[in-house]
Length: 328
Image 1: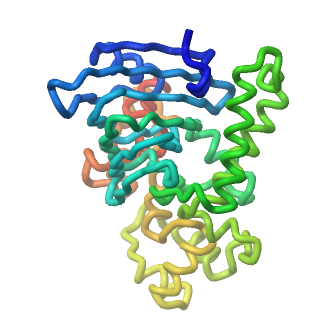
Image 2: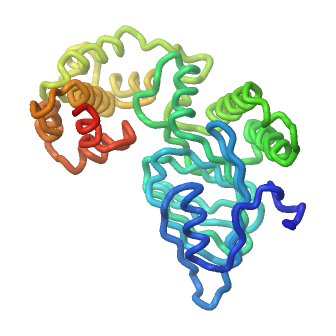
Image 3: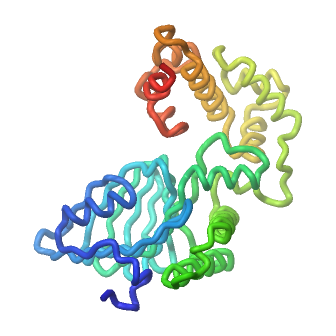
């Protein structure tokens, strides 16, 4: 029997000293990754407990040794990783943090993630499906986000907002070990998922935080709206930020600030997202043998196939060739 002191004690997924078993089991829960023990003489004592409900999951994970974990970009989900003891070194894209029981990590799913968990640093992990979080953000904003949510990597768990969020996590954790509790009721589960996502989006800074602030307008002002219309109407043409700023009568800096404040993105990123949407629409509607991925990408201004394929997968969760094959 697992120790009652272990979170989610009644939901053990595995307990092993075998590196390959731990790698495979954790990969099944999250994604395939590289796992290495830092000291060859160290003995792995890996254990994971976990439960999922709807678009959220709670996990307890401990390797019992100093390990290097390299999953790359998470792509399809967000994680909040909270050490219950010890520390872990987290690198995500250009951000780095030494995570402790007072400082969680919230890696962005589109950035490369690499971690070193020190021995004696078990973690409680909240897993949230990316599409669900972004759909929920869209409801809060009144528009669907055009670029992924990118949280600050370090999350201070001592702030009032974070403590409130932790109370929700603790409620879910305790109920997961209760037969016939709230998590057995689908309607309640959905409400708790929304509450968890809302509190996270309001507590942890990210690229849409300004747009969520109550004192900021949620509808883009006329200048930004005109710039959006211009970009959408001329997406197939060569466009620069300078061109757009001049056309709507503002400085480049003012245009960039307007997009950041009201849309949570930049003019260049907005143009790229519009072009990706147009490529996808073309691939979906293409008749057999009438176009190729390369041709469609070129028509919408993507001249580097490798970069285009990466951007397309980040945006839509599949390769462009899969989209094209799915319509033929």
